[in-house]
Length: 267
Image (cartoon, rainbow, N blue to C red):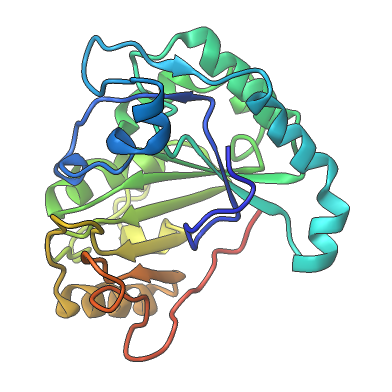
């Protein structure tokens, strides 16, 4: 869909289909619902609204990027990072299962790409993974599986579910961050009841950002600093994306006048 992108935590975006339903407070001002592709194709967001599969030409992009691996690696020293479904959700239960099966085939056949898959539906994931996901120790080795967490309720509810899914990289997108979130007392499930690990110790990456657009809800600096400090204690890479806001001078992407963009150790 886009060989280059303004999303600073990936290199490219690719959408196997377009359309979704708002399921989180973070969706209130969804950019995808009013994006140019959605408006051009008259795609309506919501339950019982048809999702639109993208065209055959678009489905060739990942294969082209995969074939360009040597050139990309020579320039960047790593594989291309592709955000999958920026205009939808891979684990949307209103998507045709055949489309998702075709997506998994593309992912498996493009091992030179790191696929960043972000969902607001972590409860659907286990039933929608490909049949051979379990053949690998941590699922497909080129999939970074992430969930959106915009408030404490979503952190308490979703992170444990994410940790139950085998994944090469597990990450959080805390954008738009709508309130202070604490990981204190959030311990990972462990077979030995004497072992207490903060969930952050088992997460590979935390991305934080404020909301963009004219109706952007404000994000407090103290919320960001708290998350950064919590990640530092657990040695979890922390990536600050943006302050958000409705204008460039009000937004920005610096934290304490520096860029804070740590990356996970990819599989």
